[in-house]
Amino acid sequence: MEVAAYRLQRGRQTTLLVVSGNDDRKRPQAAHYNSCFPRSYSLSLEQELFDQRFARIREIAALGYRPYGQRFDFTETIPAILARYTTQTAEELDAAKPQVRIAGRILTIRRMGKAGFMHIQQSGERLQLYVKKDAVSENEYKLYQLLDLGDVIGAEGYLFRTRTGELSLHVEKLTFLSKNLLGIPEKYHGLEDVEIRYRQRYLDLIANPDVHQVFQTRAKVISSFRRQLQERGFIEVETPMMQSLYGGAAARPFITHHNTLDIDLYLRIAPELYLKRLISGGMERVFEINRNFRNEGISTRHNPEFTMLEFYQSYADYHDLMDLTVELLKTVALDATGNTVVPYGDLQLDFGNVRRYKMREAVCEFWKHADRPTMDNVCDPEWLRIHSDKVTPGEALVDIFERHCEQALIQPTIIHEYPVEVSPLAKQNADDPTMTDRFEIYAAGMEIGNAFTELNDPDEQRRRFEMQLAMKERGDEEAHQMDEDYLRALCYGMPPTGGEGIGIDRVTMLMTNSKSIRDVILFPLLRPEGEIGIAQWLREASSK
RNA sequence: GGGCCGGUAGCUCAGUGGUAGAGCAUCUGACUUUUAAUCAGGUGGUCGCGGGUUCGAUCCCCGCCCGGCUCACCA
Image (spheres, rainbow, N blue to C red):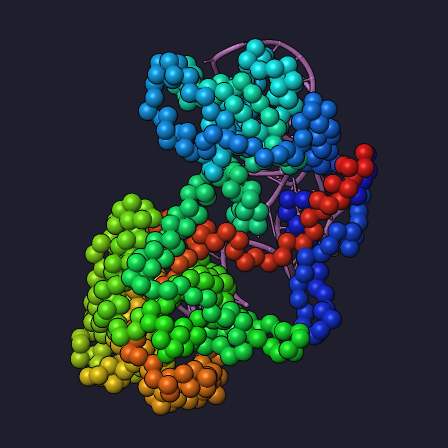
C-alpha cells in the first residue's frame, strides 16, 4: 500500500525559513502539513497501529461505549488507595472486600486466557486490575478484549492481594473513557529520549511516573514561598510583562509589537522597578511570582523564560532579608522534601545551616588555587587589577569571585557586600561607599537569589542610571536604560526598603535533585519541530 | 557562538564497506492470581537530511538539521 506519510515521532527534516509579512527578519517556523515535499512511502508500522486502533473505536462504540467517554465518578484516586491500603494484609482485605471505583490509563496488560491483569496509572501511580471472565458481564469482557495500552478506562470492584501480595482491584464493572491511538513507550525502560521527553511532555508524564513527582514538588516550592510571605503580611501582585522600558536586571530583552498602538514592547527582564513603584505608593509588603524573559543563552541552568519570586518589604534592609531568606529556604526545604537536608547528586545540602560571608572574605575563604589571597589583597585595587581584566576594582572583585570561588559554594551560602558598579539599584554601604548593602544566595555552586537594601535616593539613582548609560555607550548591551517614571516615583519618597529575587526554577532543581533546569520546566524552549503529519493520519484513518 | 558526544523498527539498544539485528510493543494461536508473565508463529526499517569517495555507503569524507554535555554569556 502506498500512501503519503510523514514522520510522526521526530520531525527532523529541514526547518523552513519563511519571511514574515511585517518585517524582513527571517524566522524559523514549523512547517504545516502538506506544505512541502509530499512523498510516498509504504505504511509504517506506527501508522498501521494507528489505523488499527482508530478502527477499534467503532468496535468499542458497537458494544455501546462512547470511545471518548463521559464524566466518571471515582471513589478514590489511585495514589489515595495505595496510601490507604498499603498496610492491609490479604486476610484483612478478604474480610472487608473494600469496594472502590477508579479511573486511569492502561500501562500494562497481561492476558492469560479467560482472565488477565492490567496496571492503570493515575497521577503517576499505578494499581493492578484483575479482570476475570466470570466476574464481569459478557459485554464488559468483550470490551476488555478490545483494550489497548494507553487507553483510559474506569473500573469498579473490590480490593484484594494476589498470591504474590500485590494490592489489586478485582474488577466487577468496566467502562471505557478514552481511546489511545499511538503506541506508548516501552514498559521497562520508559521514555529515555530527552528530546521527546521535553517536546512531548505529555508522553513523558505517561511513561515516566517520577516526572509527576518533580512537578508536584515544584508546586510545593511555590506554595511554600507564597504561604510564608502571605503569613508575614506580603500581598501578591502582578505587574506588566510587556514593558515599553525594560530594567531591574542586567540582561537583553525580547522585543514584541502591539499593533493598535503601533509600538514595540519589551518582555520584562524583571518586575523590580514596578514592584518598587508599588512600595513608593504605600503597598508596604508586596511579592510577585511570575515569568521573566531574558534573551540569552540556554544551558542546564538557564531557560529564556524562567520563574522568579520577587518580594519587597518597606522599612527593612538587607540584614532583615538575610534572616528572612534563611527562614524561607529552610521552610521551603521542609515543605517540599520533608527535611532541611536535601540530597543533590552526591551532595547533601543543609538548608538548616546557611553560612554568611562578605564577598571579600569569600574570595579569601573559597579561593580554589594555592596562592590564597589575604584581606589586604582583596581590598587592594592593584591586586584586583592583576587578577582580572575588568576596568574598575569593583567589577574585578566580582569577576574574581565568580571565576575562582562561586563553584565552591556548595552548601547554602549567603555572600554579602557587593561593589557598587555591579549594583545599580542597591543602596551604598554607610561605611564603605564603594560597596552596596546587597547579598546573593548560592547553593550547589549556583546563584539562587539576589537581594539588597533598595536605593531610594532619586538623585543617586539618576547618577546610577547615567553610569549605566555610559556603560551602554561603551557597548554593554545589558546595561540599564534610564527610567524617568521610576525616578519620578522615587521623587515622591520611597520608604527605606529591602527587596529580593529568588529563582524558583533553580530552587526547584535543588529540591528535586534535577541536574538540568529543563527537568523542572514543563515545556522548556526548543527549536521548532517541523513536520508532524498526524492530521493526515487522522484524515486517512477516518476516511476508511 | 566554540569544543566533545549522539540520531538505526513505535520504545530501549546492538551492529557491519557487500541481503539490517535483539528485547519490549504490535498481529495470530495457547493459557482463569500474572507481574520485565510464559510458550509457538508472523508483521514492521528513506539506518536524521543532502552531497562526495567507491563496483557497492547505514558504516568512510564534507555540509546541513535536531538533541545532549561542556565552555563562553547570564540568574
